[in-house]
Image (cartoon, rainbow over all chains, first blue to last red; front, side, top):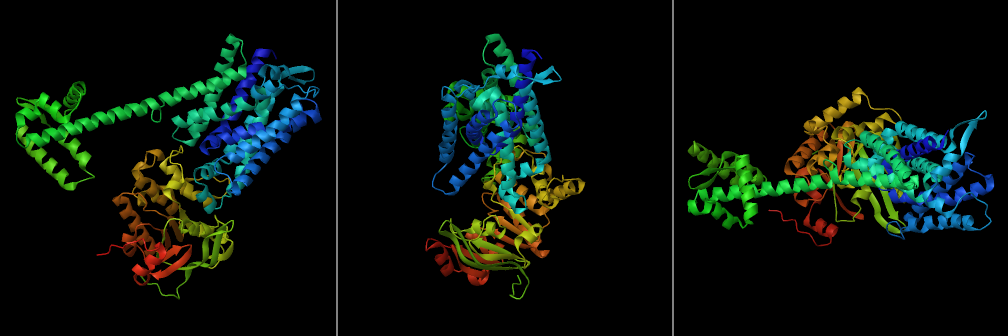
Length: 389
Length: 248
């Protein structure tokens, strides 16, 4: 198979395989544990390479994955001592393991097909060169088949344990109270994470793999109402990042792993900004709307107070409103305009008057606080309403 | 409120001690809960209320002592116990719907690998109706108010059709309507012979809500029918003299 389709196949399967367990890493707030595992597997990979010679044997995946699990165990054990707060154990263990790998690789005569660069960012082009042969014909890059198997394993694992993963992730105490031992499933899950990271190592390296695990899932989180859709979106974003990333790399003649990981970040930023409910823009819009609604309530309240009382004309004129409520003239104009548009207030000869709808709006605001007030306004409103007609 | 002592015991805790490292969180606890009663557990922060509930279910391993559920170890009686954790113990931004959370209550009886079917979905619908949340079933849980979250949790426990319910601060931060609905459900449970244990915070409502009370501060300070045990003296011993009942 030629180079470009090989690279695309590797990129897409690697991204998709990472996106599946990434969902649970994000929901369990374990993104940094993934970072730890991605570094901890490195010495295992190096040792396996020293012993086995090349990227060929399945032990190359399983050996290092065991080290990844060791990291998870070690960090849990250190957390149990309660001597450290937060993630200090993680910060101690993973660089220590990683450093062993660095020392071995950096020796001049190690004879390993790895440099410190590929360790961090991988080399997808190099991975694409190693083709798998059946009966003399090349059937595609070996890394693609490795990642395909890992993707299928991850999907099977998630489908098989979907209910259990959901329960133990959402509410571990409840899960163990109804008999789902959380730790067995946890270590099984971390085993799949370790294997995924080791598999992706060759193509994207120890640092960028974290981006593939976390960013598509985090983007999906902002858009999803259900776990099922979060999983699907996560995979979709990962595949998109891989394709667009490859295209950018091709045009810039840059490293595909880098542009892929960058695209996961770009997609995350876009969802962070534009997600319908959880996005920043929609949060701002909601806040602005609330501010206007509150101002309208305040305005109607002011009008009710004066319409039913004295000094109607000065207080209910536009100028009077501006003086009383102490708004910037522009904002006051906007609130009055909106209030008229929504039908909360109406224009009369001697200024502005509250409408029935306006009185309802105010009573909603007061409903929870003061029953007496609510009754007063609604009753007053009825009278006023009749008067208007 | 019949609480005579020769009734069958739903829960029997004997000599229970729970410690983290060498620090005791619960010390030599003896608690007996007869079938068909509502028991409140009160005590200051850090007095071990949540730990006590968790150790009944084996979520926390005891250093000494034993817990019996209907005369047998919890492991054999799992199905008969429903648990309502503190509302704040989970992440309500989790991508799931109200209906899904309630359906989780059926997972225990389904066991590993089996998926919920029509019977489980029916049970979830019924539980949602009992807590007055049937209109919210498709709502994402992040869009619920505190009271709605609590009713959602309660529905999840109701689906389990348990005989004993353990509730951790179900009234914490809920609106008056929810509090009323929960109390109604507790009483209905009692009338059907269920046993309910509630970790509670609000001393003003103790006398109205509970038959029995356990006053806890690492040790059991006092335990028994509310009318006998819930006294100023015992409150002072539980809370260390910092409490005023403010009873009229």
